[in-house]
Image (cartoon, helix red, strand yellow):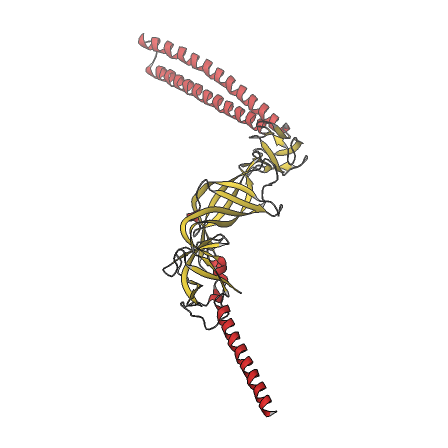
Length: 402
């Protein structure tokens, strides 16, 4: 009986030893295949610069009143299409018409004074010639001749003054007629009325500055977006590049435009940190023939560009962190602190290319993950540009763990 029990104990021990040995072998064999890898590739990355802006018409004009008066008629309302020279409002012109009549009367009076001065001048010339003949014959004194000369010069001066008065009266008359014309408000261009600021019966005063009656925009089938690009991103923006944007009015829609102009004039804004942010305006042309976009809409803009012939790492490799705490470090950064938001150009941030921050991915060395450090560049959401001596084209990096 004891011998039988001894044999059973030996058999159980052998089975347990075999099972443990198999488990260890399975674990070792399984550990060689628990990591998923993808290669480092070389090629292009489509990147983007993001910024905010506002939709506006290609050109807007504020139509004002150059004379004061009461609005007696309005011929254009909100959203109305108008043509160049079309009458869109009229002011009460009764006072202006009276001013025209007054200046006409002043002009006629000046003309009459000129005729009177001309008659006086002719008479003074005759008197001077007569006194000159009498003085030659010795029949009159020299003083009498001198007095005739003075009278002649005064008559000539009066004629010149009368001519100046008539010119002044003519200018006043022209001004009065011009002011009368200002009482009729016309559109300066073909366009659409964006706003109307007055109603019939309202009095406008133009003594200090011309009050705005209408705001007219050019044809809204073509619009533009003025967006501010931070200085760290401006090197990636050029005229003619494609822009995509969204507006909150159409959450599921995406619109497209082209950069028409990148302005050289900078704008510096002081932020809380004390470091000024410098921006440049990029003007984007937009086709609005469908009429969906309205002036003033807020736009979230993406300017698309491409970097070529760069090393690319899968973004999954940047997010990976091995579960094995005994894995080799091979770098100074904790992989759990990798922040993909720091890679690539972004609104208010700039381009991560050539930056000093280092990041880490993991490679298998002798079956164990070892961290390697490098610098990040631009990203398209799936692939990110990398630089440094730790990675090469064709190297495999760990993207996951089974």
